[in-house]
Length: 465
Ligand code: 5GP
Ligand code: SF4
Ligand code: MG
Image 1 (tube, protein in one colour):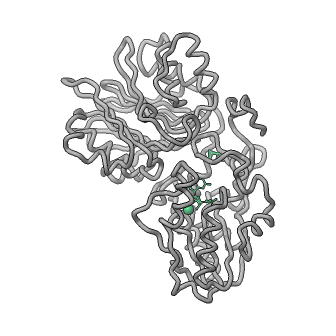
Image 2 (cartoon, rainbow, N blue to C red; image 1 turned 180 degrees about the vertical axis):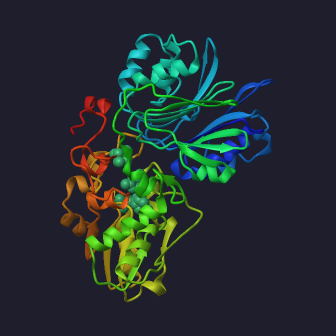
Image 3 (cartoon, rainbow, N blue to C red; image 1 turned 60 degrees about the vertical axis):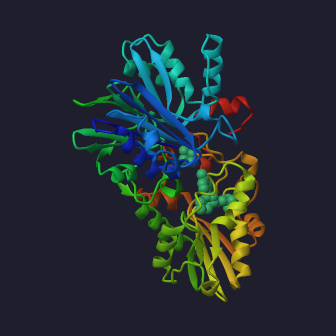
């Protein structure tokens, strides 16, 4: 999901809408905005679909006055599978003795089922099926004297991955979980402040990037400035390495590094680890593009756009049902036959998950007359599901969970298939000596099966690590 908040600007809702539009790649199913203005109180709007199709209408935006606001773009992970109900669309809102608060959450709470059961037993009335709603109910039960105090107390009971943007009538609040699994950045715009999942959302509103919120940090922002707290026990950060590979936008800066540059570097590492004689390096757009550029540069093999992407389609993976995803490949990608014909083609993509996209693409390339097809993948085999906010399928559906690399090559029907090594990926994100096996610098559970936070709810449902 994508989250955004702003305080100290006129017409906050317009800034939030712009920020969410820049974060649309993090969730395309639905979006919501909450604002506060003294004469109208809190106002909110939650809608299915793209930000640009909803939060551009004058009549809707007029219902969201105020100089403070937050927003969320949704991509359903754990909790409600398939169809999202409008009641699951964030931000969520709660009324407390000291006033109202709205929150928007990116990540996944790994003990949400247990918390929900306990809260319901003690009288909480849940409105949604979302794991994020627990935070509101935990806040309601807290004895804290202020909303930030209550949030602190609530979040200390929550396990898993969370970046949160919240607001009261006067305060904008940002929090990252102790491991800092999901991103969150701080920006400044005139006398105002912004919080966003990624820096690309600061760019769009013309805000200056100030810094990342630190893992385990809570910032409370008023028009007077930014106050920083560290409410959690300190831990070694484990940022999601897959944000670098796929999830974030290439024009964002993560951990002081350009995502584009990291992806290009992954391609360079791949070319060193897995060279092959060929005539053309071709990305699977858009997610494979920077890595393909790096691969071509390092190998000296010409780069070309052998697959053209229809710009009117969103991210395929993020479409929640298998059927839409299957159709999605043809709706989204088409082969540039004139370029491919008779050539030995290296296809570079970011990941192989179920293998459905990869198989279709290979067929399209061969139908167009390619002489050979070689797959090079910018991440290690995805063999484990993510429980921290990226919607990977169940383990059984992951190609790499049930097949060796050789079997995958056979299944996909390509001449060769190579994945970047975990160490190669770490080098590309700037860890010169690779992955620290004792204390990994990132979360890489979907590749390694080493989960930095025990997925308690999943284990209860029978998941075995
Ligand atoms: P597959 O070939 O496994 O069916 O699909 C892989 C494609 O899904 C890749 O091109 C990748 O860009 C895309 N993808 C989108 N979102 C995700 C995600 O959250 N996880 C993974 N691993 N791949 C994703
Ligand atoms: Fe990121 Fe993978 Fe960890 Fe999920 S399991 S947080 S996708 S690295
Ligand atoms: Mg892709």
